[in-house]
Image 1 (tube, rainbow, N blue to C red):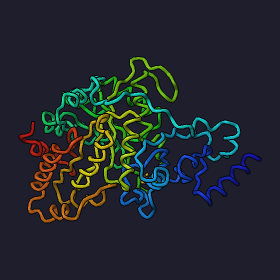
Image 2 (image 1 turned 180 degrees about the horizontal axis):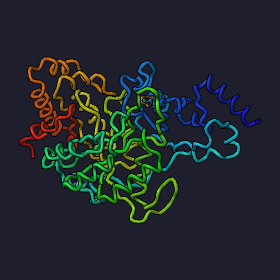
Image 3 (image 1 turned 45 degrees about the horizontal axis):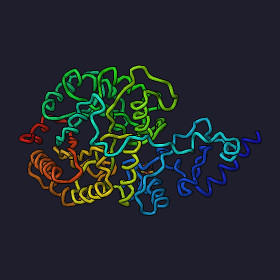
Image 4 (image 1 turned 30 degrees about the vertical axis):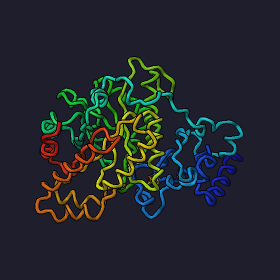
Length: 422
Ligand code: SF4
């Protein structure tokens, strides 16, 4: 009873002062006195890929909590941030002072040590069975694209789309619960692509996974010889009624969990040894257009240190801003540890064009939007734009390839986008 009263008083006081969300393992001293749990995704390490002009993806009228934290803690520097662990869910709505006094909060607030992954990792010998890794390390300018996991159980559309891209791309992502809606799970579709001779990249979102279900998917991928995984935060569900979103990990912790398993053969959060442990080639995403400019650099450094091998960026419409981002990446030497695939949009319909302003975290200059808007044949314009972007990306230092993202559903356009390229 006394503990409950204590917890309620603390929640009231710190709630008024710091917008505290009562996680019971206070990290305010590490986050510039800004409560990370007030991020609507509850991310312990952030930001997600969604903020535009420093404002939150979920609540655009609020400043992004993690942009505020980076600004206050880093003060413009690009230092590698600490990686905070997932909070211990048993301590929620208990008093952090009592937990500190009794030493119960150590697990949830002590920064996780980064793994020693060596220097200049892109030069290291191939470490996994991933064909994608081998292609990166051969020096090839890599091309990837993506297929949507179907909403129903039929794989007919997957087989159809796969035929268009089979011989034109080095690896293919399979989306996971796109827009937060149920679908065939990504690993299931990835296994099917593997049988067709495609190198699949299975996607996993923090929004939908507990640690247990994520590691289980890694094991499932390994059993199906799916060698690549992409770890994402995931858009927030905006449907009503709101349903439970997981956020048991943020994407850095997901990367760390996957890499720890690969390096040690053990599950980090249980320390259990896994027989024939998964050896995934691990991908992450970054939004180069998050501001201020040091925020995506710190986030990228953290994802590299957490264990990412490659990066797929947010869609790039603003080429000049992306060049500036890549210059900073190279100045910091982050490209020596990560292969970076530039996200190239393929806009093939007016519906897709009109959707551009609604994509979280997007930076589309007015003149680029008008180019699509005024096009007499938007499909042809979309192909031309994507081909121009690929040609530009090949000239940017630190870019190891492109990831084509089709805004639309007609995959027959993709061979035309890459026609004539090596
Ligand atoms: S933009 Fe993303 S990281 Fe920032 S507060 Fe919103 S949900 Fe959290």
